[in-house]
Length: 111
Image (cartoon, rainbow, N blue to C red; front, side, top):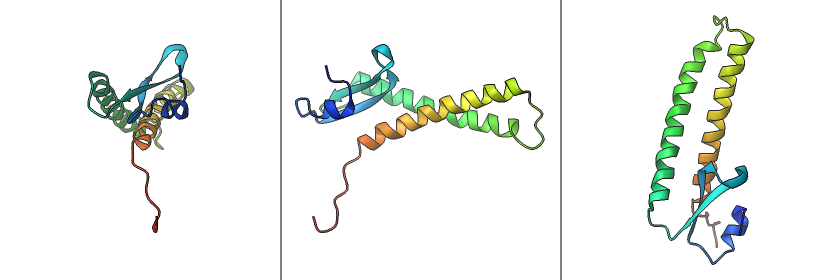
């Protein structure tokens, strides 16, 4: 079974390979191979990505005053908010990677 994105792209010429917003078995990245039409799994992935982006926006808004000049947080409180920010940033970076992989390649002028 193929495990990396590059390996998946060489298996049976799939028309669409999508990085999913959750991990597969053993904590490895999970991919969905489709013909490009919406599937229940791709729609679920869309919904989860949307929720992750919304959650990240809320966490950023809540964190702003917690790290401002006037904030008087303990080390544990700062560590907690940093952890939530890292989790959200990781989710958003994975979404960006997934969407970037699905963008068509740009053609260089003159090609």
